[in-house]
Amino acid sequence: MQDLMLRAYKASHWMEPIALRDYYVKIITYQQEIWRKVSFYEVIPPFQAIDLGAISAGQQSSKTAITNLDLWDNEFGQWRWFPLDNAQIRLYLPSGVGKWQLKNLQVALDKSIINRDPSLVSTEICSWEDDRPAMEAVNFTDYNLSACRIVAMGYRFHTVTIDDATILSKLNAGTQTYTPIQCAGFTGGD
Amino acid sequence: MDTALNKGYRVSGAVVNLAAAGVANATEIFQISNSSLQIGTKSAKIKKIRIYDNGTGGTAIHIGTGVNTDFVAVLPAIQTVPNMDLVLEEKEIPEVEVFEDLTAYPDSVGSGSIDIQVEVEEIG
Image 1: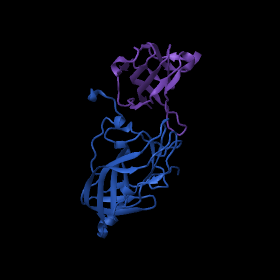
Image 2: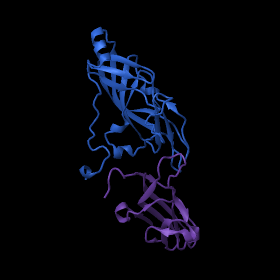
Image 3: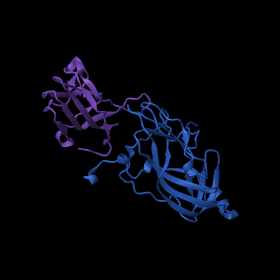
Image 4: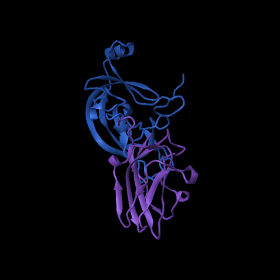
């Protein structure tokens, strides 16, 4: 009956790299925008990115930086992720900026995401170098959690400077195709 | 019909000993997650029940919500056999959804007691 199940993302598909080799990209961090060209990418298989640790019933973990998602200089990452344990996770990208921040609520994610969005499309984020994301977890249950583990997967992309002044000029003018890479949350407001 | 969007995940309550009979002694067997920090409201459906009768002489177990005059049964009573275990699986349990903590009590315990544990699908 799997095919008849109602899912939030019916058109979702498995993860694909956001850019390919030789693509021009605009890295958009919280404070700057950088033109780069992709020179190399590789897939990162699912791995345990962090264990936010034990959390008592009804309590919240401290906000913890995910250092395992740090990348080398000139690299950006594309990640999808889900929690293994029974907690609601809030994401920050970078640490001081809430991700998925609506006007009245910062959206949190729990492990039901596996049922509702099996391809994890809605969890996708990008990060630049070691501008690492951070997470905090709420143990909403009446029992203590021994661990709060996060599994991440995705791609890392190595990029190089664009030396060609003509290309840069076209990129700035908007006449050269490029891929924007959003590597930060947005606090909202004008 | 089960859909992926309202599908929850399975969690177990603790093993609870029911040593006192009667609705006034209805005891919590599963607490709905209701942390003030959580986003959203949780509900639960019972998916598995394990009972062990510690020599009560046989009794009926009532499962529901609330205590005393607030008790509302969510299933018909379940009859135990002395010194025997009893397992009800998902296909034998009506898909009742509750938004409150689950409670249970036996009609009588004699000189014994009842151990009970439920597994629920918590949704939200």
